[in-house]
Amino acid sequence: MSSLTRSRIAIIAVVVLFIIPVVIAKLVLDQHWYQGAVTNRGTLLVPPLALSEETTAALPAGWRLLYRQPQACSDYCERALFTLNQVDVALGKDSQRVTPVLLTHSDFNHLNISAYQSVTRIESDTLYQVLHSLPARTVMIIDPMGNVVMHYPLHLSEQETLAEGKNILADLRRLLKLSRVG
Image (tube, rainbow, N blue to C red):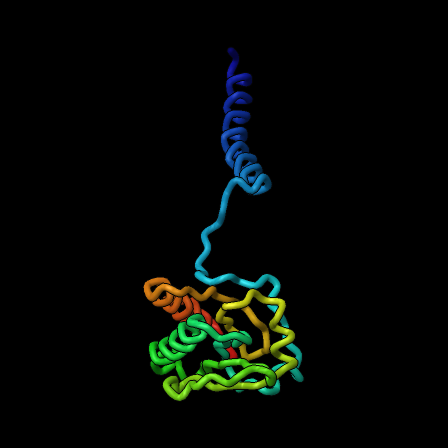
């Protein structure tokens, strides 16, 4: 082989060695064979559910951790209130930025929430109807701009409730750390 042929083969080999990984990466990403890492522990709403100013007028300012009370309150209500209260206590200095909220409807019997001092009761029929599109028995995170960004399921077992509370706390801490508002 002449030196010219060897040079061409060497150049082609180098180009192919650099192009093949790019082509394989493009194929893997386009075919969705790769699942990227996820850091959130709750269900992220994409796009977030944007609430109007009229709807959020009843809510306190800042970040909100909200539970929508069902008409027939069961053990889930107690678990939700416990979780809201514990997450607020566990936030420490950041608890001033977050308000735990129990959302009720005017037709419902009111729960006694005196044991949960950090939880604020709000009665808003319009907000209740807007949030009806989200799954029942969930705790929601609402950002200062009025967007529902995440929600978490409730559980009856104590172990699962504590684990979900830790999930809420981890995501909320991450959101508060990255947030420039509220």
